[in-house]
Image 1 (cartoon, one colour):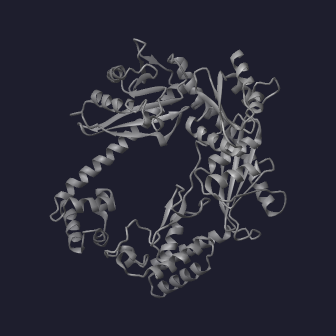
Image 2: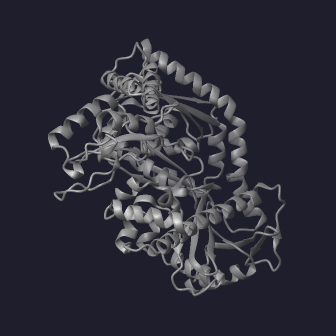
Image 3: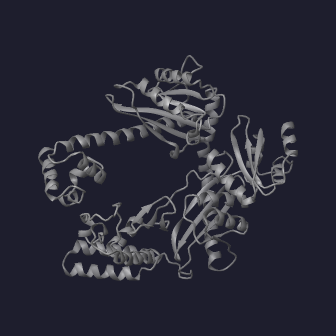
Length: 601
C-alpha cells in the first residue's frame, strides 16, 4: 500500500487510461479518465463503494497508466485494452449474439448475401431477429428482383448461366444475359425493398401466385403464398407512430450495483426488428460508465444506426464524438423524455429490469462454472498463479492417416473461440500420439517472444488430453524451449485423473467439483474441434478418390465439384441439371457422374 500511495501522488492531470493489476501481475480492470489524478485516487478513498468495486480494490496490487491527447482517445484505447486483456472486473460481452444482416456488395454487378460480420464493403440491412429469417428475405429478393447471390467473379469472358438463371432467380450477368444498366435498375429496386418499401414486391408476388394457381402449378403457387405471408409478418412489425425513415436502436441499462442487464431493441425503417438482453458484471462507479462500456463493445460487432435512444445518464457528447472519429459516421444519441421514443425506452427499461431479476442466479451459477472454478483449480493443483488463459491440445487420426491437432482456449473458464487453432501434423509417420503432440507444441511455443505473440498470447496453463506419457512428451518440448513460467498438466479420460509435473501420483478431483467440470469442458471442446477438422480433411480425401474413378474427371474438375458441393453425399444427391452448372461439367459429363453413382454406390 505504501508503494501505491507514492504512485498516487505522481498521477498527472491529463486524460488517459489506467490499468489495475493483481498480485500475479494479471490485468483485472481497465478504465478511462478525463483527469487521471482524480479518477484513480477515487478507488483508494475510504468512502463507501459498491460491493463489486470494493472487492476489486482489495485485489489491486499495482497499477499503471497511459496518457492520451483527449478523452475520446482514452475511450478508444480503453476499449482496445479490454478486448486484449479481458479483465475480470470489466464489462465483457462474451455471450454477445451477432445477428445476421443482409449485405448488398460494392461491385460492378452487386450481390445480395447474408453475413454476420460488419465491414466497409457494402450496404447493410438488419440485424434480423424476432422470427424474421434472412433466408426468407433473400429468397424474396431473388424471386422478385433476380439479383445474384453467388460468388462468381464476373469478367469479360462469358460463362454458362447457372440453374438460378433458368429458374428466373438471377439475370445471369456472368453469362452476359443482361446489360449493366438493366441489372443496376433491379439492384435499385432491391435496395428500396430492403429499406422497407414492400408494395411493389407484394404486387409482383401476388401476380405470380395467381398465375401459377391458374396454371394448376399449385406447389409453386403455395411457395409464393408463403412469401406473401412473410411480407405480411414484416408489415405487422411496423410501428405506425414512428417515422418510416427511423433507424434507431433503443438501449436501456438496469443495475443493482453488483450485476447489470441491458436490453437492446432494434427498429429499422420504422419497423421493430426485435430485441435482445445481456447480463453483465461490472466494477464501474456509475451507470454512465457501465452504459458507455456496453455501447462501445456492442457496436464493435454491430452496424451503427442513425440514432441511439437511451437513458438520461448516457455520456452523450463523448459517445457521439467517438463514433464520428472512429467510424466517420454521425450517430445521434437521443436521451428520450417524451413521445413515442420515450415509450420505446420505457419498454426497453422494463425488459432490462425483468431480465435482471431472472438472471442473477444464472450469473452466479456461471461464476461458479468459470472464474470460481479457475480459482479452485489454482488451489487444488497448487498452481503458481490464477489460470486466466488455459489452452488444451488434442490429436485426432485413424491409423495415422490425416493426422490433425487442435488448440482450444478458455479465458476465465469460458471458451474464446476466436483464439482456437488447428494443426495439420506434417513430420510424424504413422499413429504416434506422443510425437504428434511434440510437433504441435513445438510449433505453438515457437510463437512466443515473436511478433506473432500478439495473436498467440502466452498461456498460464496448458492442458494435454492424455496421461503420463503425453505429459512427459510435451515436457521435453518445454525443456527444449526453456519454458518455466507456463504450468503444464494432462487429463486422462478414463478415470479423469489429472497429472502434474510436481506430484508423483495423479490427482483425483471430486466429479461434482466445478474445477473438474471446467477441465472436462476444455478437454471435450479440444476433442470436438480436432474431430471436426479431421472429418473435413478425411471427407475431402475420400471424395477425391471416388471422383478419380469416373472417366473424364481430372484434378481441375474434382476441385470444381468439391468447391461447389463440399461432400460426396451432396454430389451423389445432386441432379443432372445441378451438376451441369459446375464449371467444366456439361450435361454429358453430369449424366456420366450420375450414372456412375447409381451403378457403383
